[in-house]
Amino acid sequence: MSGTKLQRRHFMTSTVAAGVAAAMPQMAFGATRKKIKHKPLDPVNPDILFGTTSSMWGGAGVGAKQTHDTPWAIKRMAEVGLQGIEFYGDGIEAYRANPMELQKMMDDAGITFIGASNGEKGQSTNFIDVDQVPKTMADHIAFCRDFLQPLGCDHWKINMGQRPVGGPSEEQLKRLADNLNKLGEKTIAMGVRLSPHPHIWGPLEREKDMRFVMDHTDPKYVWMTADTGHLVLGGGDPVQIISDYFPRVSEIHLKDTYAKYRGNTQTPTPEMHKEASVYHNLGGGGVDFPALFKLLRDRHFKGWAIFDVDGPRKGDDGYDAIGGNRELAVDDYISHNINYLRDVIGIKLPPHST
Image 1 (cartoon, one colour):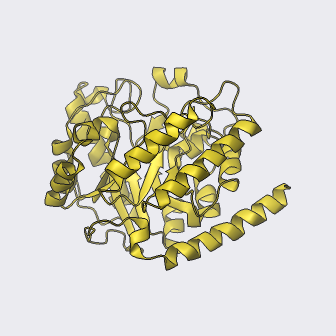
Image 2: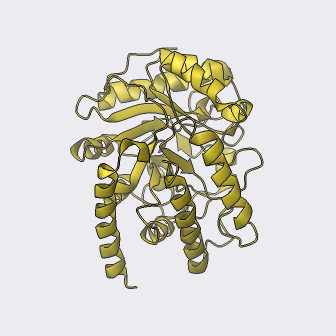
């Protein structure tokens, strides 16, 4: 299929998918339990919801350590005015066998369970290697059925394992797209939109890889978690990418990087990241957040825009200035990012200081 025909097919099917989604009953996108009604925070678009992943205080990321547990995080996020949490594995492992225990804590705090990333304990994330795919599919279907669906999750951010050496071949990308279609058909039947997360050092690192897979997946079964930092680090323009795939964007991860990485032709390596983080708190200069929020307001995005900022580590901006105290640094990161949204973007979050 030619590139022109492929793009035409993508935009037609994306538009159709958006219409179908709007017409489907509420049960289709999340829906086994009553949702918390949150007060609008955006001054223009009341349908943007604001939250965070658990990466700031959890164990996700290079050199990261779990600084706080899940009960602390739920209480703290409610205190600072955020509306929901998307967890990494360390945050939900204690509740895998009893998701309603987690749900009660979140309901009591008035916080929404947005979801939980894949890659949980014992869960395969390899969608490419033929011998690994059956376990990957079985693991994901079981987790969606047993944990995400009971908690009313309406979309699921997933990573897709390690990037093949030398980058994925067209055959590997086609296999990935096919497997995402198959899994997405299963999860949407449970009310959960499968939402792959383009990520550096994964198969969808570079913009061309991401666009190939999005254009070879069915909009009825596959959406996208658009991470602003990763899209820049992979050589793309997140505002343009989110605009192009707007009907299929289920969630925005708010992450920044450095201005020097804009328009790069080669992704920074894991070794570079180990030496000094290539990620940054909001305001690092890599992502044009005012332009992003103009798009989300103009096109009336309905969904979550959430911080996905790695926990503090030695060498990060500001970390050494507070004596290398990880707990203080976590609160400093929370404060910085909330105040950025408040002061620069105009989000009606309460002012926060450590």
